[in-house]
Length: 286
Length: 306
Image (cartoon, rainbow over all chains, first blue to last red; front, side, top):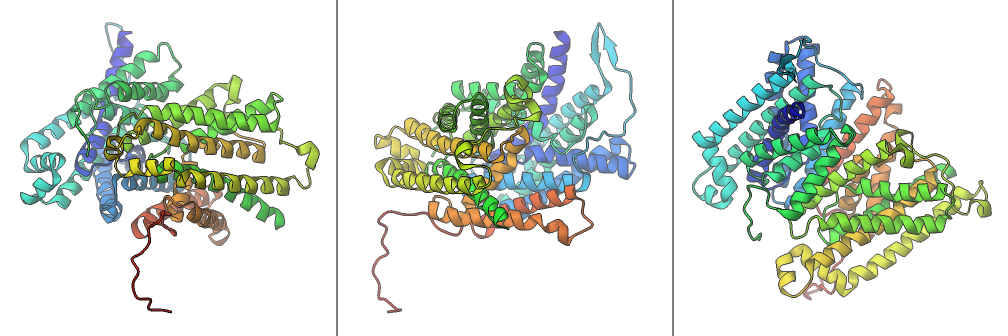
């Protein structure tokens, strides 16, 4: 049981990274990015490319993937989402699904549907009072916590963070006050790309690389973001932890193949009982 | 060649049915269904499982329609008063869950092996030789019936209320419309049509497996609706044909680019379809045919081209 809780915290931190990314772009652009799953996959494949084809060790490959995906995300923002920014948010949703479809199939064009693994040394898990924590999990914890700390610093302490929060609160007022919206949006996508790529690399470290790996996390990531009150990056962390814990502890009773099904049930319950999420505020939508 | 044409037209009919469904849910009521593939799977598997149990084709189809409609209603309940994004997430999560059940509950669905040798309705009466043509005829008749029924619904006060909700649910609610009931009904109507299409899919292919009910079905359906013009059932016919030409046309891709493997050609094709969807959204967001509007007459001006 304690082991399940530990695993839950680890996978919760992992889910929290893309959930924060989702919340950030949602807050700024007011649309749910359905390509987040495909972005996780893209990040993992970028790392795989750097790791195996270019032969870079994983601690070099991971930042390469993060920067690479940040560039991809900004390119997609400029090439797709900005072109249809005047459409309603549903059109943007549909566009993001199209983006996911393109990303996934470009990947399987180059790499096929084969299951791959990153080239990392195998190490003995750490043991402490009967609890097992393998090195991959340890890296997840360290990377996720540092990434969250950096995001929190950026949001709270920098000019960019202030601009992001201002746009998220009231885009028109922010514009009037001279905040460069286009630039802030680009940076938001870049941060979102970095976080998502890191999550992709971590998932790949702990398991395998295949074209559907991100898709398998999509529901959990959305559930985490919605529980935290979508648009609220700090809520997304708590949401991630809740989803991680629920998924891992339920695995004691229900087959792990239904991991996503569990997230779906949690998501449905939250939407029925507290639709604004744990940390969202109920407000009349206009 | 005739066989190929018959097959293509049957696919187009199925695509049109899915487009009709999406047009009610999304086009009319503004409810986004990213889990269309899952509902399609529910329809197909319901029909297949019942037919394998010896239930006749008609009853099994009705059961598939009813099951899919009921499940659609339940899933749409999860959105209560929320914005459309949540329905998109919920339906997508639902679709993923359906896929998991199809893959893992082997006792019911045959798991990843799927269900084979699904008995075709009326095959004893028609005979195997002409069956494909008969099936196409049946699909076309069903498309016509669904078109007429939906057309009535769209023009009815109910349809008007749906569009009112789509444009502004707060105003509609203030004017005394029960937003939740209307939304659930609209989603269930769409679900019924998806269930019908699913049952036809099962009968046509006589073999189904979980892989067929993946995200690409949903992407095709959205593309059909967007190309045809959201909200317009007439445009949809054109949309479905265009998408089918694209799908089938790109199938020959590998004949022209011989250095691609079959798998690469397939991926490239799907990537191009996704890119096509994005390009349409950017350059032709209203599609080929705009939504049918009741009694909106242009103000009479001088006729410049008598």
